[in-house]
Length: 95
Image (cartoon, rainbow, N blue to C red; front, top):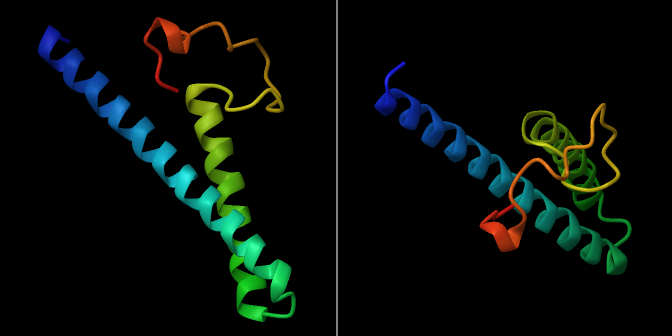
């Protein structure tokens, strides 16, 4: 693989990682907002359904992200400690 192919592959991986993180953020926002709505409308069947659906989707996406790119929180079980592998935010890391 030449340098350009390597760079394209890295860009593609970075883009996939960013897209997955955006999906996680959007679902996280939705779960929180629906939860707040349910505080005042606890019998709304559609909201309950959406909350359950989005919570399951969020769990699946978080699990996928963490398997591919490392832990999002300290609560993700791992076989090796990956917190120190990437650059820290003050070293240019943006995760």
